Length: 249
Image (cartoon, rainbow, N blue to C red):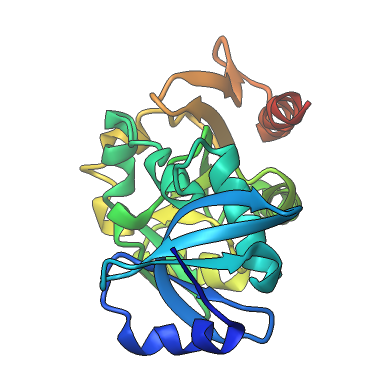
């Protein structure tokens, strides 16, 4: 096995040929592209063994690596040798049929515009609040700022939920004006897709504002209407808050 100096450690970048190798850095920021093999202890010091495209093995004192790389190795070993970043990627949650359906036709605010979200890039959430509302509705204009305030605060703490606005406005311009005027931070159903987006419109009732809390399969957890009686969106928001805090606890 070959022992390298810190100068040689930096020069190894020149001959790096392994396409899947990781770029490592020493304490001074000098890079080296190589594959991690193992660590071992000798004389009270820990060494890291790397391999490169030339088939040679190289060892570097662990303490010469950057703090970030030392932590990466610790995480790698704690994860039974599996790249922690790869493991996280493999844990990506697959969309349910309900999520695939509702993600297709969503838009979002981009400054003073409303643009498509390209549904395939959206990440699943544990809870969805379907918000039926319109600018022409005074009670809606009263509740929307409260929902925005809650959304912004809860997203920073929890993040495992999403609000989807389904407009009852009379035109696309009116809907987009509502979104941009109030700076809605959440997703919205494309105005032109309301007739075909049954997965999102199915929860609506006879009045607005109406907030409906559902899970990843579209099962209703809380509705603004209970037994045909309007109880309002605040009760739904309270239930969402309870569930999010329960998960955190």
